[in-house]
Length: 446
Image (cartoon, rainbow, N blue to C red):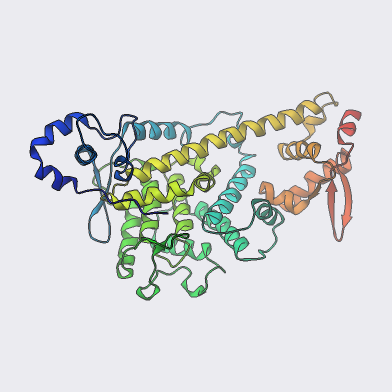
């Protein structure tokens, strides 16, 4: 990725052209005519408002933004504060998230049912583990990774180890979701994220040192995109970041979602570890959102959305760093990502509701057999109808739904021994259960 062009010095430009200030102010705003919060790298190529040059247009935009900046006590390595604007679009997105990620959810959604939540929570943890790892270079396919998680087998290579680590990291974050963030929690999180994947495993869970010589480099051009702060100040910066995350050092109100997004950005910016910074930063975003009451975030995968357009993700970081630490670019990008992830979750849940209703419909006239099955069995039955000869195992059913081995065993034995909807076969010391090719006929026999 090419580093965006650093914007011209708008303050100097306005000082040198004071006679143009009123004309410029009259023709510019925070955004362009389409409501977009654009960086100079794009503004310089667009047609400016009539009567202005591109540099004059940019000077006016920056003047309007400067007057509306919210400054944070978090600073870059030179002591300059990070800041952001709250545009109309950001206001709208934050309101949408308040309504759709922190409030109630309709009772027909599976995640509204406490008995069904664990199934969908495990799915989201697996999805985030896979996608966050793939963003950082893991090459294992989604299908193979899901099979590994479902079967509970050990990783075969570094890519699979990264995915399993991410899964455990997300579980760790859930365990601490109601605690104040501390440097110790962040260090332990990094240790989990990088277990068995570093060239020097002694670097897991410890801050980098000067000799590590870490920088962010583009994978294709090998251009250096980011030099993180000096290692000597990392301990202090981590303490400040925790204070920010816990809301302990704010001059005023910061919306919870902006706080979570900023936490994501700052850990990536500081790059306190030799590797695993991105994965750790995204996990901390989840901690912050859930800690602040946005409970539905547990069921989404932001990394899956980011992975669809990774260049936009990287560009949002670079826009902030090259334009006076203006976090607005990253905030706008992440709000779009979160909204998309939540919308996709709603669509997925609607589909699962329909799947269960379909299975219930098939069973409705079968002497009430459908009422004898729980939602896990109904979901399996729906899958079995579509996949004749598919093999189901007790431990995989257990891992998919977050239930005990005995509960999973009873689910499958009831469907095979009592209802004859699955064929039970011996496999070593345990049983496997096969979807019979005549499953629909067996249902109709009832």
